[in-house]
Amino acid sequence: MIRRTILEWEAIRYGDAVDEIPAHAADRIAAVAAASPLAGRGGGGVLEHGRKALRARGVVGVIATGGNALEILPKIDIPGEDGERATGSIRRRLVHMLAVALDLKIDAGQVTALDWQRETLLEILIRLFSEKLVDAVRQGMPRRYVEHADDLPALRGRLNITRQFTTLAVEPSRLACRYDALTPDIALNRIMKAAVTRLSGIARTTDNQRRLRELAFAYADIADVPVSALRWGDVVLDRTNGRWRELLNLARLLLGERFQTTSAGGSDGFSLLFEMNTLFEEYIARMLKRALSDTDLRVVSQGGRLYCLETEDRRQVFQTRPDILIKRGDVVLQVIDTKWKRIAARIDDPKRGVSQADVYQMMAYGRLYRCGRLTLMYPHHHQVGCEEGLIGGYTVTSSTDHLELFSIDVSRGDNVRERLAAACSSHLLEARVSLTGQ
Image 1 (cartoon, one colour):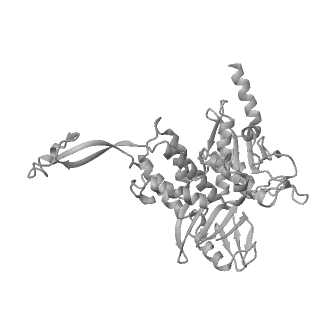
Image 2 (image 1 turned 90 degrees about the vertical axis):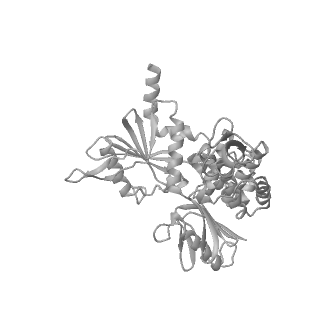
Image 3 (image 1 turned 180 degrees about the vertical axis):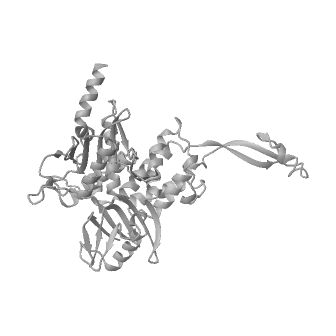
């Protein structure tokens, strides 16, 4: 199996060297990437398929076909580490971001440092899922009472009067029965079996394959349902089976719309992909909600939805959806837009690489939402030229609105909520004063 790892926006050349990829494998991988929903209309949103190399874009994950795999990781600076150690740490941080953004309670404590360095993101997620599922099945597979309808020689449950005196009127030896039976063949277990079946054809490590074979045997009596026909809405989680919530979320990740099997270039392939802009936005929004949970402030993600313009007949057009709104009651105190971009301190660029379009967008948000505090939030890296936190502040010309640039170091897993709360420090102070006054 040929396996290569690159960072987003990096290129990998064709060839037989250790840091290259064979041309035939590159063609197959590029075809699978082009079939992804994240590839866009032209099919180049995941990988640029050049004459001499494949170049990653702002999408991370794993693309594989025919025993060949290309792993794309986010560009995150890990201080004091390089090579395989840095790659392993980036995988760990990416799994953490996925867990927060997708509401997955993943305990990666059993994954050793060597595993983070040696296995791809996909194999690590398969390991976390299969280990957790093995433990859950050993404690007992969930069962529920399901209503059955059958024609039996003796009465069981209650009699279906309508069917008995119509369809079975000429066959009095059979009784039309309706009864409840306790069965494991329920929606939750069918989803788990679908995940096990799908991952069994994908896993490459010996341990993952062994666990999935054990699970396939345990789920042998559960009905096979195609992924497209799974009834997610029929899953009932209550106090008796609440421990399965994490597994359900992991299965949704591995079977969801971001994960797809395709047939590209005559060979089967698959991809597990995430757009970093979206992932960063969801991660920041959820961490801010946790940071402000004990205050009177609310975090609203993808809210607002005010329109920029009106036509002559009063129709509204150009709806806005700021990434994050910090609100107290109905009043917007702060608008935050997240940008997965690497801005840097440069003598020849006083704008620090901040996009002019992003500034215009924030000025429009300030006007529409009547908010004077506007924040552009970026991932922190060593070229920023200062410590994590406030990078720079500007006053919007001819107004009292203030635009600030803020960075958050996603390579650090410690005190993320407290560090993010610094972006809302003035509101937090007001909130705590207010709560103390009460």
